[in-house]
Image 1 (tube, rainbow, N blue to C red):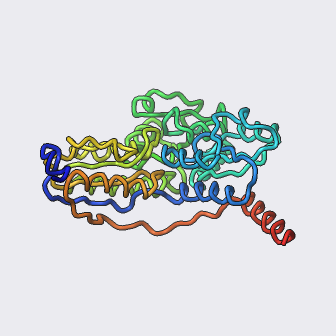
Image 2: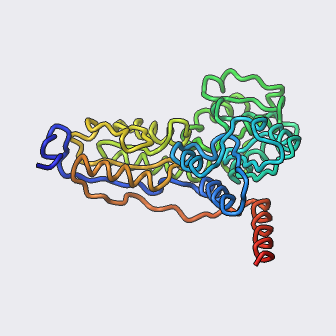
Image 3: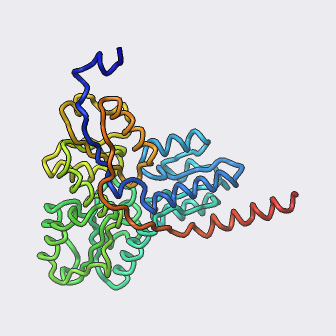
Length: 334
């Protein structure tokens, strides 16, 4: 007798799995992961990465298995070693520390995060006090705050927006953490505008296109399903927001980063299940989640939504230089 026949209480009737589009890796994450993979192809010594290259446990563990060493602080990296900055960006102080240790640095900061850094610096140079909307303990926020210490303040919610103090209410600007959606920041920024009518905002939204697209997709997905599973790690801000967005529609939703995290009781009686993935979650993990769901019942898997246009960010110059040097060395030894 099959396992499904012996466990009728955890099986579900034939149903549908709607697989969200867009989902999974964004261009910034793909770029960061590609940087590590390319370095592994050409670099003989150990590769160190400050913090997690992206906030996904599976990605980090796979790189650790290939010898990549993740550290919390630059001081943990031996002098003259190769160090990669994560996709979330770093402060000037971190860069100085790396130079002082003589480290060879490859910067995997997402270009959209770098854009926010440059905007904050520009506003500060214009004499504006900058308010950063974001989460205090997120790696991206630490890097942005470090760009202009003393001339920038963090606001995490509406209450803080109502209470924050600035040197001159007539000269204030705002930037936002990229992994928050327009919906996440709208009320906070409206509150700041009400307090500071002259508030200056960036010429273009700081919000990462991937964050916004995935949140819009998961809301539509939640409206069509009985349950939403978000593939992502607990420390992934954008994955957390996806799960929250689904729950706000009234649909049950869970954040999971491994197929065995699925409680069979979640799917009992569910005729339609939505599956999406945060911007730092690999597609093979999504497929393993689908396989686990198929063990719990019979489902037809359908695509839901439209894929976003392909975006490719240029790799850092330092990486291309190392690759060129490796190619020259290879040709000389033939």
